[in-house]
Structure formats: C-alpha cells, structure tokens
Image (cartoon, rainbow, N blue to C red; front, side, top):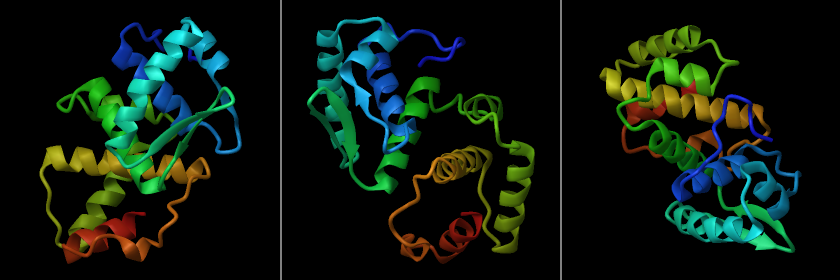
Length: 178
C-alpha cells in the first residue's frame, strides 16, 4: 500500500519504478498480484500489464527476469543485480545530482546516516582509500541499499569474498563496511 506522502505515479516511467520498487521491497514469500498493483496506483489491470512489459525491459538490463504467472508478479535473478536495479531506480527518481544526505534520510529513515558516514569514513581512512564527495554519496547509497536488503531478509547469495578483486583497497573497504 502506498505511503500517504507518496504521490500516485502518473507517467509510465513512474509506474515502472513504482512497480519494481514494490516487488523489490516486498518479502520474498509475499504474493504481489496484478489486481493489487492496479488498485495501489489507481489504474486498470490492462495498464498494469502494459507497464509490466516496460518493467520487464528495464529488469533485463540488470540480468533480472520479471515474471507474471497466474496474476502473480515476481522477480527472478541474483540479489546483487536486484540491488543494482534498486540503485538505478533511486537515481532515476531523484536525478544523479540530487542523491543528497537529505534524500537518503527520506529513503532510509530508520538509519542514522551521521553514524554510518562516520563508520565509512573511518574504514576508508584505515585502508588509505580516498574518494570525493560525489563517489562518497554513491558509496553511502550502495551501503544503505545493502543494509536495508539484508535487514529485510534479502542476503546476497554470494559470499562476501566474491567481491571483485580489481582494486584491493576498494575490496577491503567494501568487505569491512558490509
């Protein structure tokens, strides 16, 4: 169900993002039905199905498959790709230049961002890993998405040691943060 402060998606791309977020944020055991989605965003089932076709294309860009079987919608694919898709949606909703601390506080109100920023800063310093403000905000967003997904019982299927080893310092920072 939509939050009282959340606006009803009017444009197709807004509906695509809304539906994908709804799927990503739900419990894996929950069933998301076409009828419920239509009711949630005040459109017909036909409009939801057309929107889902566009959502499928977006999901494919992240090597995920959006399936509809017997009026039930679900997303199939690795957790890592789901997190990348979630980041993409947040960035597309707020614009790449508007992912600020204030925006992240609205997206993740249960986290103390000042404390988390301090932890990330100390870990980066410890590993002599320096990043600019723009990259730092993206690292914070990635961390928040990961923490939120883990907290919502969506752990990454791969072991943390499978983080890409192309940059040793970056890998050490990522492993310690998560």
